[in-house]
Length: 115
Length: 113
Image 1 (spheres, rainbow over the protein chains, first blue to last red):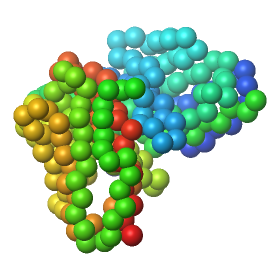
Image 2: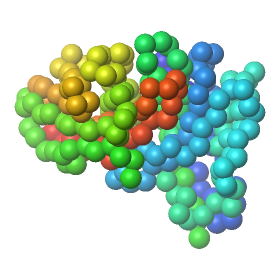
Image 3: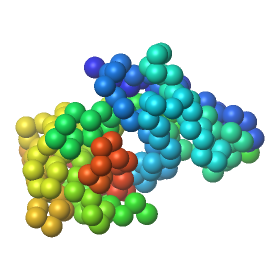
């Protein structure tokens, strides 16, 4: 059972364009939604995160939009740069008690930004 | 640098063998999580320890086990290895706060031949 569905699998954007990656979740208990960026040979690195009490969060060129009623959230990368080329993962977690805050990840999106 | 250290970086072994992957969490982090990353399955949660105690289990095979030691470092033991166990294994750590970020190490790439 895939609890977090991510699309598209891959995305090609021109330099300066907007990259948009979408995720949908099923578990209404999820209360934390981070996005991770992963470069080849490296571990996933936290990019930006949001909680369901806000509908949008912006950090520099990166924005998360969150729609609680639709159970969807998305990552927007403005003015995309070749250095943004990486795999992006959305994730979600819920406080299930006992200090267990494991993340459930989407399948990932391979972003390529052409110069 | 996330502050999470994993060793070794690469491991090549034969089917049927047993290996141990090591993880040192960020200073002060009490929780350690193990994830397996493969092309077809993505990032799959294996197991979590909090301050030495097992707190959650995910899609971890019975051939796999883990523990967290008093100094908070963790080891993931994989035994009776099969070709399909070839993957990247990541360790992540987090602080105690609810739904706090997970910080990942750079992983151990396991190749079973």
